Length: 336
Image (tube, rainbow, N blue to C red):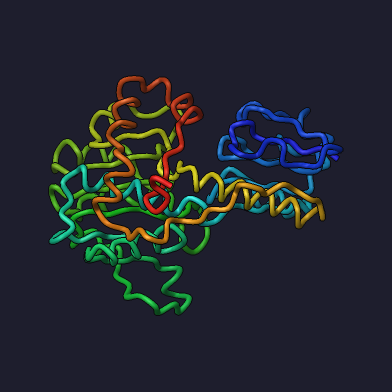
């Protein structure tokens, strides 16, 4: 049996039985030749999994160490009997850490300002939970969740969230089709609803925001932006990079614990699908039970301005900065 693995996935080497052939490749360089005789593929967002890569291969399982699956042609995979699994929620605390540390460095006042949360899934709900613990007022928009009848929170319209929030953070999947498409969800009209001086944070996918109109708003309406994901990354918009208060190379969820969770999830998927023993030792994430989420703990654990400075100084190094990132510790694991 053969498994092809993105070599940038941390903590995954030497986890498989010795008799399994494991081929490690740079995610962007994984080729049809590499996967032709493989039964499983373990990837990140940099590997586009579609007919071009997988046509005629023996692949039966794709496991992505990411929350999103928009780099995978799901309908095509389903038509060929290829199972796809992801790692939902793996990086949620890391993203929450990024969101709040960035907000606090960009002038957000937790005592009087309102935080709008667009998308209340694995990540958005953690952001909401931390906001509640810190006494921050929130407004939440999530039409799919609301229409499912999940009434554990109070929902607001997108328009109301944009109009009334002092900061808006996006935690939505990237979808172009279906009942709730998110592609370019935040465009000229939506940006025009935001308060002058308010903050937009995007840690979901670049394509959910129309970058052209975001640049106009940053220049003309004194809106601030915290951008971690870019529409054409790694070929990012240099003007938007400079206009944003904090600009980072898609590392919002890059915590050590988040990477451990993702790797554990894909390994468990391999284990269950192929009835194969895998080594999960050291991938347990047990937080410091003595710690409570607070502004001081979040700021102590991470300062996003350092990552922003590195990217602004070397924008052409987007991929290297991302691939060679030193995984930070999440607040509840800090100093363990």
